[in-house]
Length: 243
Image (cartoon, rainbow, N blue to C red; front, side, top):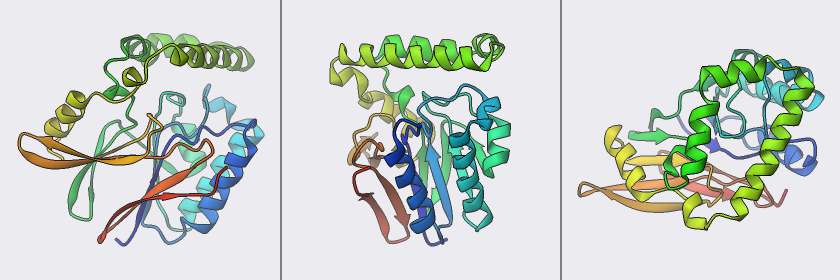
């Protein structure tokens, strides 16, 4: 294994064509030769069910990922807070493997915890209550039983309300809770955590029970996009041109 790439929070949608093109360029120009590509949630701005694969943009994105997989780079996808309804049909179309959140991997000899990151924002109690509801079988069965257009309209409405709510919350509420970070590192016996969700890319030192650990936060793809590259020689966050 020589090089592993990790991304999250692309929020791809037809209304942000520059971000879509940046992602396609990333897959074509940067990913080839990588040993794995991990997408840690929110690949899409929203996902209303795998029967929406017929949407032209969704089909194109799945096709690009399938080409990536067929060209030798395994693609791993994790649910985010916007695309938690991604399921088997999408993964089959994209040649991708769906990861649990959290997932532990070995990155060049370091036991590493991969997460989307939303469950670490424990001070945002309203969001955590919504998350528990929408991840439940009853809510998802009811939502997926609605016509496709009705689901799209409902998701757009939920997204609009979410943006309004975020403007009313102090930044600290929407960031990770340090105690929650230490708890998940301890529970999973890891010294490294990689996540997205907060849109605050960076590298942070964490101490867990006297043991030095680290937390890497991935870029979002609004304007300043980027990725995390892991190699045996170390880790680095790489910024891409503005999308």
